[in-house]
Amino acid sequence: MRRIFEDRQGNEVGQLDLWKYEYDARKRPWYRETMKADRPLVSSPYLAFSIGAPVITISAPLRGKVPGVLAADLKLDTFSDFVQAQRPGEHGIVLIFDSMGSLIAHPDFAQFVVDAMTHPSQRQLPNVKEIKTGVVATALRASLGRDRYEGSNRDDRGRDYLFRMAQFTLGEEYTANILLLAVQDDFAQNVRSLQFTGLMLATIAGAAFIPVVWIFGSGMSRALKNITAQAVKLQTLAAPDPSPVASRIKEIHELGGAMELAQRAIWSFAHFIPKEIVRGIIDNSISTELGGVREEITVVFTDVRDFTSIAESADPDVLMHQMSRYFSVLTEAFLAEGGTVDKFIGDAMMVFWNAPNPQPNHVERACRAALVGRAACDRLNSQFETEGLKPFFTRFGIHVGDAVVGNLGSTERMNYTALGNTVNLAARLEGLNKQFGTNILVSEGVYLRAQHCFQFRALESVLAKGMTRETRVFELVGALT
Image 1 (cartoon, rainbow, N blue to C red):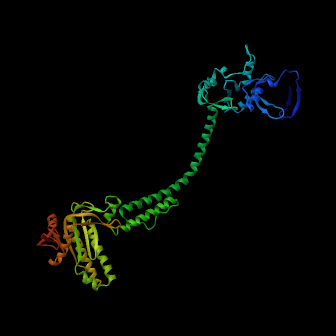
Image 2 (cartoon, one colour):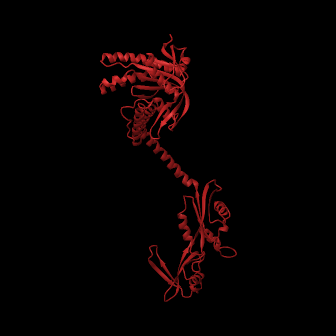
Image 3 (cartoon, rainbow, N blue to C red):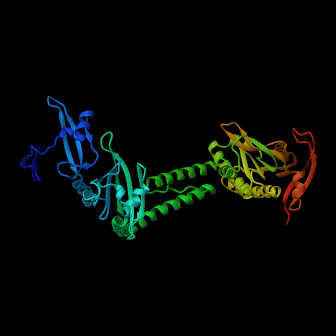
């Protein structure tokens, strides 16, 4: 047997041959097991023959002309010192033991070895079974029989420990366990320090950013308030703003542009469709499906006397502008009384009340609107004559009754209107003005519902065109004073 001594840098400083030491490596268990297995092995802890200290032998077979085993002993006391240097925290503990309970690493490994070597009965390696008190014993009992376990406990000094036990392999047949214990305060102090530092940094950063956030937030708030105001205008069908809401924030800028576009589109749409209909479509009170319901409505038809002869002699462009002024005056009178302007038919208009929104006094509203419209047309005619234009003398027909009110047309284009005999009779009454030389004719139903508010003149009963029964006709003269 030859011993070779080296310094810490691995330089050989001497050697010693022990020919009569009576040591034959071929008889050692690690030699025989490695030769038999013909692969690298890691032995269980044992007391070395040569140095009398606990070791683990790592061996591998030599394959060549001279068969043998290359082996190295790992001294467990030195290994324990190395392991403890890697412990978690200042007061942490690391414990490594094999499947038989033999200690491989322990903070007091050296003392365990001394106690084992001086055992009264026989020398033996230290075992985890000898650890019966303290936080280590508590952790071992808690993790007994488990490959992996973690938890917490407290020692007799009141210190709280966190522990974790895990199993790992050393070679193919040799397993070991590692138990790590850490004192919470070792890490909590650092955490508290970092928490305080982080809080201070956050406070300073927050104070620095407050002016920036205030300026940024104020600008964003103003933009959102302006967009909200546009949304309110959208519901009231008010005229759109001259320019969209602008913002440096891309999403808010795009939202402002989209809102301005929607407001302008709906505002323009309300010039082609009655505003009450548009509002009903927006708040979903009016369906966009084809179909209708039967309701009682009051219908007014208007027409211009001798309009055909006026149109034949008038300049088309001048006539269009004159008609627009005329319809504007009538429309204003009808809308003031809550009427729904259904359509313009050449020089004629159709207006109805009590739809789409209910109006308990819809007959009175229609009569009042006709009188106001007649007076407005008289004033407009004075302007026309001053400008050298021919006057428009308007005739009105008013009737109340049931009609089908709803969406008429196709799936691509539809119109909210009214259909039925009530609409037809109102149109016939307007035409009868020519026969009686009057301006406003109403049916008996209108007379009975509004005679307490207005002055009427009874006329004879007539059979209107397309009707099967005679209709009593009355002239609306004016309002009762």
